[in-house]
Image (cartoon, rainbow, N blue to C red; front, side, top):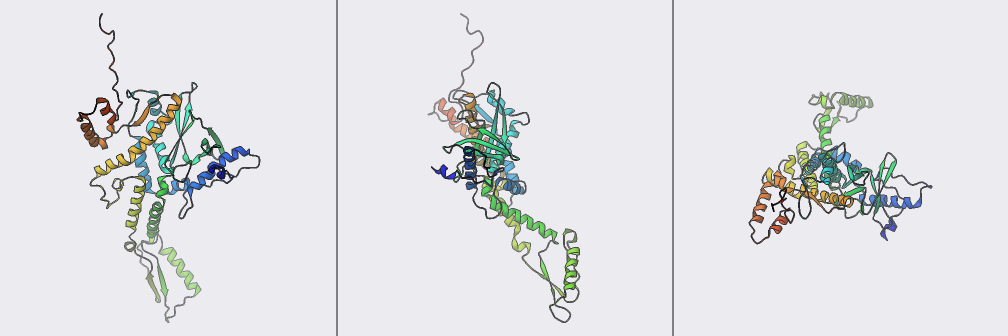
Length: 414
């Protein structure tokens, strides 16, 4: 099988704590853990520009880039604020243990904070992990989002995940999966070349992030060097000879570095003695069109994450007629599919713990950005006389059958 070829004791440079196993480590555990690391390494690919591992990309692409930071925050915060509904084939639940658990997943986080962290990890690394803490009666008690850069999938003998390793500072905790009640829920994006890990949009936008960061560094260096491109001082000498003594060269270099470089010396005039001539070198900022380069890179970053450039203030974008249309497209094409995917995985995972067949999903009827579209859909469905009431409810995302009205206390008199 394919997985037999992957059982080689090769450390994974993408994952922390992937030290080469020692001679006393059991062979079975080595095969299981090292398989995950080999598969993980294979999915990372070779790098051309900057490191593409999760930690490096997060540092340079999220913490060090304003466009990516804003795009990911915009998606994560919007997705975490989407109202959720829980229903079965007959009714929607206003109160339910699942909704109570999501409302306060753990003592340190609210529902919005936990979901924002979950969506953030999924956008940054393509993977999101949630840990279940069960009560004494084996019912779900707490939910905790685990850092995706610390998790390793451990495949079993058949290649399917048999557990997860959480590695921190050289220490490892093993989560053993269960076919029904798994302690960890792994949500991942589609990756065509990796068996166990998802592909992050940050990977697709990495080149655009490098271009944007390089343009920002160039602008900063330009300001630090008197806001003008580099040049050359040409020495002709009083007798026309282009030769300068070693002492003259050293003194001139020190004078330029001390008195004419840096932002504090910007605009300071340079006094040249006889025989010295300034020859500018390189392109001017207008020739290089660095602002257009940065705008193009920012637009590509927004495209990779599915955010209309108009929403993050990129000038010159006329893809959408107005801001309201871009806002609707953002929710319809990016936020709602993301929330639907995550809530479906959460609902299926929780069903394994409680045994209930329920559907957890977003409620588009409560989103102001889609109010006009939802109102038009409601009018079309309600006016369709050829549909039954149950079919209309299904088209609108409601339970197929309306809940029975409660009877009055005491019933009818005999």
